[in-house]
Length: 599
Image 1 (cartoon, helix red, strand yellow):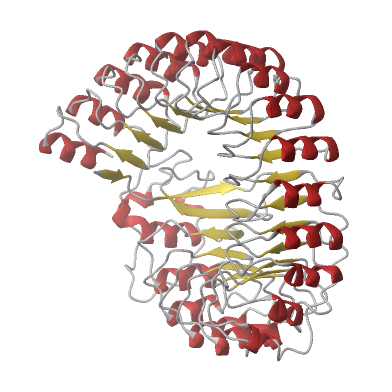
Image 2: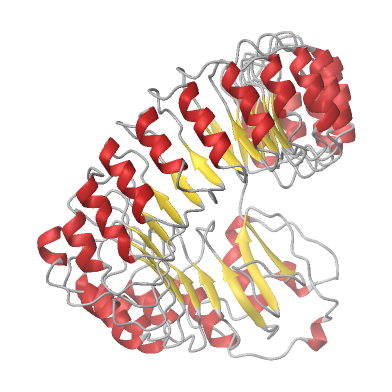
């Protein structure tokens, strides 16, 4: 059973260093956040605005008293809350409705009409919005960024309205807008000449609209994941590529081969990132089309069949690769991988996850040639011997991320890797040869470590966890799932990592509510907690979380000894969004109902 908190509004000033999805002035996010952070405005200072048709003539009584403190508002009042807040004429620049369900085209219309400074709207997952909502968006003449992911009822008509009204668009995502076809996309390309980023993933488009798209002089990022209507025959009719294009993703487009790709990218000399994952086979002939991309830095071929000749061709044609992803590629061998890494001296990121045919030879060649590596992912490379991991530590001093899940690495390998003082993320799950001795080496030398995955490392005890907790004060995420020797002592030590945000302790039967109390008191920033199958954790642990872990957003307490009392305590955590409560024998229907009503 999965419980989700009610949705409420939150308006927050934009930080001084905004993220790509924020801008100057203010932004409004409608999400499970429970509070309104309001300016100090008295009712007499509220400007008069014209009422919205088909809405109540007056704001809800609760909102007539608007003190400069936080409120918890019932979810059913959320649309009126939005209208009232926007009536304050605050200079909102961004509205995020991607996790909201209780707004309509009417509310959206009032928002757009009253917020002339809007440059960004995220309506992702609004599956009930239709073309009328798109027509409303078209009134936001200054809009620059728009997300319509999974707005499956919006068609070419609505997108045409957006194209005509929002001429300043720079970013547009139409992913999963299945009713949008060549017509709508063509209109966007014709009217929105300043577009820089366009996501058309999973759309039923063909080459007919691509000609207009490729004429966009400022387009830098084009995503065409799983556009099954694109094929070589159609792409070969294109007469030119997009000269400004820097990033192209044609993942899961299995009908696009090297001939179509060559035509599609002709003249795209600025291309830096090319994603061909889960597409056609990479052969020598296919790789030859890469010779025109002198600036290409990143290639992702995840899930493709890659031949040895194809890998050699990549090594020959790509002179300055920084990132190469071969995750789950069949056909990757020592010979092929060595032929790439020996020519790519500047390679910084390499993903060879589940490349099960490589061995010590590949790691030896890689570490000797690519000494600037910062990220190495090699989960389930089961043919690589334990001696190879010693080479990684010796030859890759700049390593920041290492994933060796399900490998033969042992304590000697970890001791060598501990010399990578910049290491931030380490994953050694299902590495049965790792013990406390290896973790002690990491704790003593890797003070920058922020993420540690010890999933099913059965040789780990409190000694190893304590060493990491003491030596890695920047730890943010730790996974000790099914480490059955971990007890409350580990949690008490981890409570000293004040920045800890995620703790996964599923299947650790020896931890109890005592250890959870220590985590709750010390790790006030905790947002995710998984204690499934920790049957010694009971209601007192939930009370501790309710008292101290007010930032908690997600918790799994299935198979714990929690009853109605504990669940009701958790319901008081106002940030909580997701709670999994499978097989709680002490939980009753009345208790569940009470928790839902209290949340």
